[in-house]
Image (tube, one colour):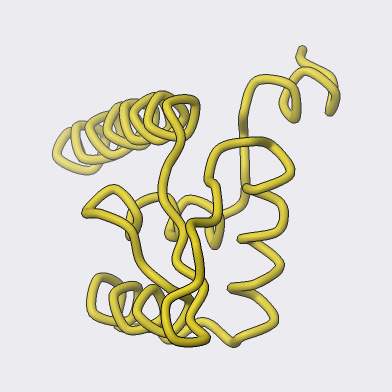
Length: 107
């Protein structure tokens, strides 16, 4: 069984963090553009505190980086580590969905 340190160290992150990575996978965006993109993807709008908390954690993990300000907007982009983390988490989610679907069909 893995400890919480193994999970945190392996690049696991919460759903808001994954959604920020998914949004930035399409290209650099500022906070408001991420909120709109995430709402379009999921049908749910994150609160600003949730978004900026996720951004802060991702920045702290060096998975995203802030770009120079554009007219008071602070855009972010994925780092190489962020691209890798996003790909790994997406692959894990795809395995979970495939397993869940096959179990549901077996009923």
